[in-house]
Length: 94
Image 1 (tube, rainbow, N blue to C red):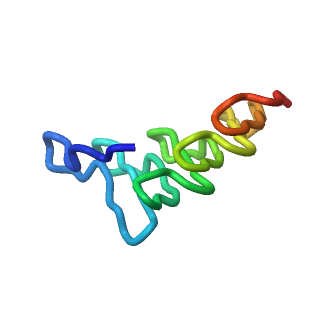
Image 2: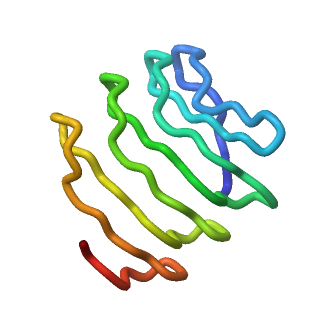
């Protein structure tokens, strides 16, 4: 995954890479997503957040592809769906 431009027009950082931790932000500076980034690829556990700051999705990557469990939460913090991926392909819907 190419990271590209690192700031919004308002000068807010789009992302910060510290070692192997990559963090993305919304235009207002709130946390958007965070996870491991190694060899220019998303790896391991990633968490994605709504603009409100609420947890939205937890999923796993292997070499930039979805791999493993992906759980999405609704706005009431209940599991909306749980999917299983292998090498970027959906293998099981729970």
